[in-house]
Image (cartoon, rainbow, N blue to C red; front, side, top):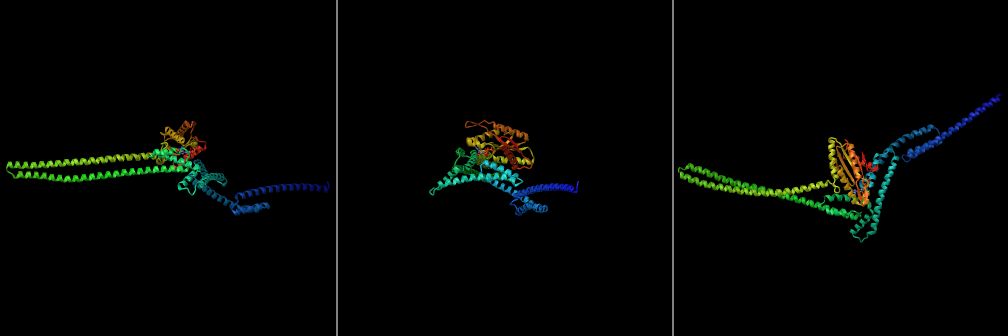
Length: 544
Ligand SMILES: Nc1nc2c(ncn2[C@@H]2O[C@H](COP(=O)(O)OP(=O)(O)OP(=O)(O)O)[C@@H](O)[C@H]2O)c(=O)[nH]1
């Protein structure tokens, strides 16, 4: 081969290598630019995620993006990334503080809405669930977003229903109230307006009013009047009518209070009168005893004098006849004095007897008055601890009983379980068959509770459609077993309203008291278990 041929071959080999190197570099550059684009895309998203939090972080990220676009000098990038890192750390720390503040603010607003009780029972339950979720907390703003959304919807709905109610109330009112109306008409019109449009609020209030009446019917002397008010609550009343009925019941309660006060006053004045007269009888008895004692002393002295004179006469007389006459005279005087003494004693005894009889009559009267007063107080005490509708122990009785059990438990622990029971879909019964059907259902459930569980547990109607049971000395398996028996029994009760067979079920949350518990923590645990029972489909017992 000639030299030229050799060098041509070498050149073409070199050219081929150069072509390969050029194409490899092209591929490298392509990969690099794809990676740079990816990095720019990432930094852009990071900038968006952090945007608006910190101006200098925004600027630094913008500069990093620009640097990336125009150069691939990694030492430039490294410097900028190093200056961004501490800002990102600060951003993360600030975000944690903001999250905590967000959680607290959400909780505060939810709790104040909960306290205001302007929402209905269903909303209250939804609010409680939102509060529970908020309490559990979240680790990033993104996790909070769905919760905030739920809150916004909840507040929006609450606001809308309030606004709708008050707007139509005031527009109705504008239409009806004229300057000629007197105050009563104005109140009436306002009442009609709100009655037509504040149905949700009125219904809840009416139901609360009804439960108060249930208690009063049991305790009040005006039982008949209160029953009349109660039976007029069968339909939804306008606010002004409900208000008038409330005032009527208020008057009855006030009247009863005044009667009660008057009877206590009468009892006290009888007591004071009787004590005063017993006191004066005792004083006069003592005075008359003192007076007759003086008379007795005088008669005794007279007797002593007669006896002494007899003995002096006997000593100073020699004649038997004189002695006989003298002694005879003295004996006659002594007999007279003794007769006086006897008469005095008899009179005294009579007077004393008379006074004692009077005193004992006064004391008996007093005794019978205090007995009837005591009986009345006892009856009132029992009634104040009893639920008027179901005759079960009421919330006050539960508070007292559970507090006492907790004291025993902390003194020496024992199996102490608390169960919170709630009727399922009870509102449906009221809404479909009326409030009195609801009341009958509550009574029937209370009776079943008594029949099935009274021997094993303290039972109370905690309020509304909620009951609470306290078990002592039964282990977990036994308690759950008993609760399931109760649950099944209630589910099998044959309720019939307006010709329809209706079945009622219970959701039950149960827990055992633990060492660190107080009344509230134990109750809340049982209540949380009840919510889980509702959430998991109702008609079940959940241990919490
Ligand atoms: N008849 C009657 N109803 C009452 C009484 N106390 C409370 N209620 C009603 O009980 C109902 C309870 O309704 P909610 O709290 O919505 O509960 P619910 O319909 O049972 O639904 P869940 O609890 O979710 O199963 C409300 O309609 C109350 O008015 C009462 O003494 N008598």
